[in-house]
Image (spheres, rainbow, N blue to C red):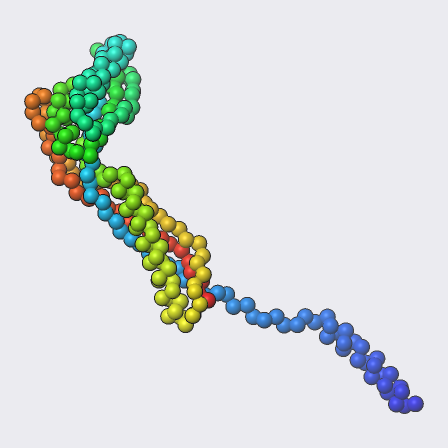
Amino acid sequence: MHKIIAASCCVALASPVCAMASATPLPEATHIPPTQIHFVTTANYRVADTELHATLSAQASGADPAVLASQVNQTVSWADTQVLSSVHGLQWHIGGYTTMRTGDKAVPWRVQETMVVESTDPSALLPLLGTLQSRLHLEGLNYTAAPKKLRNAKNHAGVTALHRFLAAAKQDCAALSFSGKPHLGGINLQLGSSPMPTRPYPIVMAAVREVPGPVVANPDVSRDVVTVTGTAYCR
């Protein structure tokens, strides 16, 4: 009889303990964040400047904008048909056209049309500029890299910078005793803007057709850098 009561008491006492145990959550495993490393890698590139760009403008000022526009159009047509068309390999296009009030009562209107001339053979373009300046104004003259070569150089530098990024990630993760292949996170590739020449170009204005074109500095190189930034997770 006592044994049964005792057993019954034990069961009764054990029930609250079991209930408390079931309500208490089991401890979870500690979460360890992955090891991540931030990288910045770069690759430089340089391209020879082989193309010559000249910016010229036809200008006229006076009282009647319609008359001025006709004068400017005639000047541009002369440059197009009589000068530039005579040389093979030149490319040119109209850069802009403006009509504006000057605020001067004597010449209240000013009309201007810009022409951009490009050549892969500077020796063919330079002599023409002396002739063109007899009727047009020379606004600018500079050497630039060929667009296709510049684009290829940028792409090659981008691939090089990405390879350097991956190599750096493998090397640093291995130094931290991680044997697995790193998992790459977000990567940002910055190709940069088109490089602009920073060297000076002395220009000698030629007012007579027989005089050779302006003197321009020898072509140099356009250079820039591609930058890759991002994160790698060691495993």
